[in-house]
Length: 136
Image: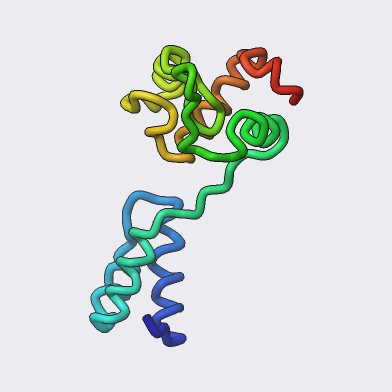
């Protein structure tokens, strides 16, 4: 999609404030309503595009590298461990629920951002020892 200077200004005027608030101001609504259909489409596209995911570094980067080579879809062939951090299904069920991300049967079925959030929660909740054998 070709973006003109006007489109870029409209995108900034409408989308940036929405990152921090739940509603548009009357000025933002007026700017949107005065935009061309192509500009409105660009604004909608920008609002629907999720932000890029950046995995955590440090200790969890080491665990991810050691446990799965960074593969969020990894599955251990001899246990129920799966995902980037190789959570056992039972541990995943407990920790993902506590972290507010229940609903995935195993870690590898959860998106990378959810796996990272659950791993971060696990470490912050004092369960870093779950990965003692990793050398991290």
